[in-house]
Image (cartoon, rainbow, N blue to C red; front, side):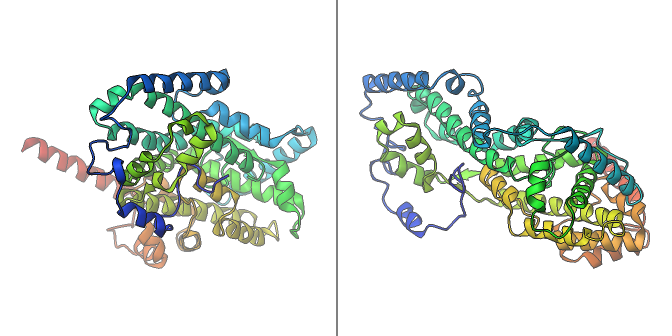
Length: 458
């Protein structure tokens, strides 16, 4: 599987391709009347009809699961789930003993967390998932994460064609979209199948992937993760249950947080742009017969010419997302350390193990980069943890947690670069910035209403 199956890779990593893009684009270049090299000037309707017929036969042969349900969108999720499950093979169901161990660990973790944060328990139930359960339980969120990226890429093809070309190639575009959905679904399935075997909890990558109010742990993956560690597996289970429960408290009782995290990923997708001069050159050399072979379609989609270009909008969205994920993970680490530190001697070592797993780009981060096209790595996790630690020590957990009351109150990326200064402003703001976060929020809302009233009067 490619590391970047949706056509994503690091910009500027292929100088030969950049050189080719600066060169002549041949018959499909900028100076021709055929911007995509489809031979529109000498267009032969009979040839197009023959190609469409062949496409229809090919899709029909793929079966109803491929050309039917789930393929109407930019990603064929039926295919994705099938391929993911094929990778998993035969799965052993979770035993009653394991389910009880997970439930007991979560119950104990919740009791200990009550003394470390003012946010109440957020999970209405805790479940032990098999890898297959994880796929079923998180697929709806993956749809939300992957659809904007796939839609943005596939939509660029249609929007870039001149109106007359769109009218002529309409049926072909629809079929290419279906093939694109198949290719995206195929690679999504491969990625999810791999991730399902390695992820430890439903919130391991800092995103609320599972259903709201459901805390989920993966016993099989936790057992593999525990191998080679000095701590007993039961302690590791309680530690991971506490992290999952802490995440659930945040996502359940901070109303804006779930939408802000997932919405920022969507903002990133909307910032995607394509280098159409490179696409023109690539399209001019495509052999129409290659479109009859699904593997060739996938190969074409992965060509360097089809890579999205990094834009300022994407950089801003990525910076916001990295800061937000770092704040979430830093808060969870701080709260879990306070809750378990004296009760589980190995909690600090486990925190460092997970931090290194995240910092070096573990399986979750690599898979997310594969699926959505961005590196979801909290680069400022240590700074965020330091900020929350300072706030806890100097202001207390209740006042610390007040910062989650509104997104305008939480630290930004610049604050993570200098957490001490942020804490000083928060504690010694003299009644201006952070003396009372709730009062600040009310003042901000009042000022916005006043400004809105003035603008309406004028």
